[in-house]
Image (tube, rainbow, N blue to C red; front, side, top):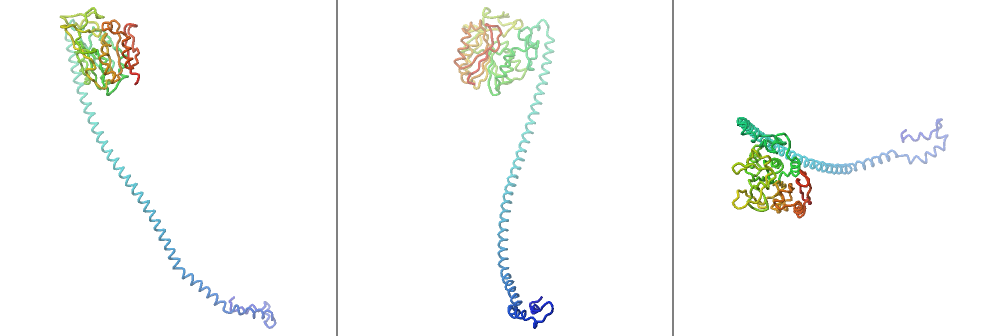
Length: 397
């Protein structure tokens, strides 16, 4: 219903006229002024509200745009920050990858160089082994062609326990053991290996034919081997050459407590018989050349030179093995400064009867090592109360 037709409200549902309904007519008379022009007022109000809203729209739009710009700036800054961090991380990763690739290239080059060196060394070793095998075959053929009666006790090549080839005499006590496949003094070999120092120096006093010298050459950077018997010294050098042990310095002489001349002790100071030929030892007949002892020479006697180990002023001595048939304590006395400085493991032999010829007692050994703060224990007893091998180690190590 339109507002202009409000006069219709004055009529009754029974179509009663205003003339017959004065109450309604009166009421309409009272309220009609309020409804006249209401439509215009409402429209004006709507127009005013609409105008206000329209006037607010630019302001609201500006505010919305401002908020949107600020949000965009913040979002852009955040994106830039994240992108910058990712770029930095990506750059760092790229640099690291490049570094790793460079390192890989260097390592690859080093490996290639090492591989070439190993192949070169292996080739050289193969050539030397081949030449050595040929030489050994020639030597064996030459030995086989010698008259049997002249070579029955001569040198032959036997195989040691660590695959070494050893020149030994067939009549010699130690040579027979090696030819039979036995190991000579395994307790000494074990002690040497336990004391191994790849950067250390070892001393072999009384090296004989080099059985223990060869073991030392595998366990230490340098070995000094002392052997006073010329005939045995030559075999020692032969065994070192045969096994290509180039880190051994050989000395055809003896160690003692000072520089002095020494000679082979006379028969009554030896434990075994010493057959001689024209004043020289007959090694084809002697049964145990390792058992020969030496003593201080008299003026004019044939002699070998002896020195004190301290005179060599060696550094980094890690092992001293002494087997000098009775003069072991004298050798130790000449090595006291070296022992005090380097604190090596010491292996020595006690032989009661031969030691007495050099004025040594077992108590003297213990007193010597006590002064240096060493602990001493039996390594192997050969003959109770008469002969034994000992090992001495610094207590502070």
